[in-house]
Length: 315
Image (cartoon, rainbow, N blue to C red; front, side, top):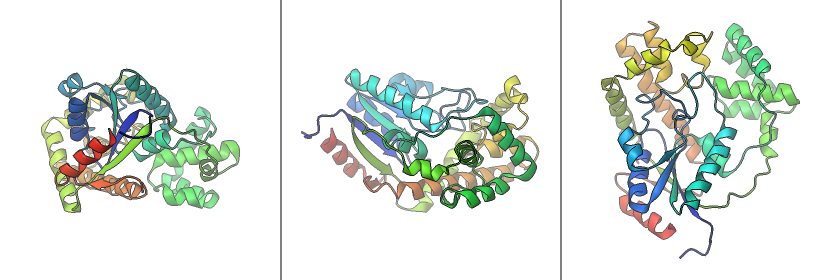
């Protein structure tokens, strides 16, 4: 038995399409667990097929938490996730159940397990000002501005990551202090849980790419484009001046589908762009996961015995 008496939490981490959700569901069914989603797309209502949200049958067989928290025209932050996830962990543990964190959003994992700095709160007026500047100059120009004031943050944030560029510039303009400095000064309290972090990733990148392609084709066959047509038809979405700036629409696959329905691409180019974007997402996720030095890696297909031993030793 572990000497640490804190309640146990399993954290299944990994790139998109690596098999996290399937293993989380299996372990939760066998071990009396409940799943806490760590996915920035699954928090949005209406993002079902394209976000690979758990089915109604899966949710009926195992309780899932932190799904459908916001409408797609709303924003949800990593700080909000940390609060909501902590509450979910506490509730699950209080029921004597095993919490299983499962997802691929690294910022959400970091916010929960390591904590975020007490930065200035969001300012709607300033965000609108930054969005207008981006509309006029492009997000690449704002990324260049970030590189001048905070090279460390600019190196970490992609030039196309509008949400994080906007937040970094917002923090600087509100406080006069770079966001990277705020992050270094974080004072996080220890999470009162034992956490077993496991990374699920196929050993061969080609296997992951094949899984991504098969899954996207399955989404198309399941009427992903009809799902997006319904999303676009919502009055609240039609009222947005720049819907592609919404975090929900920036989810991988959704932006490419939106542009396709706008007539920017034909069917073949849309498919190619969406699969490429998903591969790029997986690449970024793998890069982040390599920094999780206390998380052993397993191929979910070839290392099942090792995964089962890790689970048995921990719980």
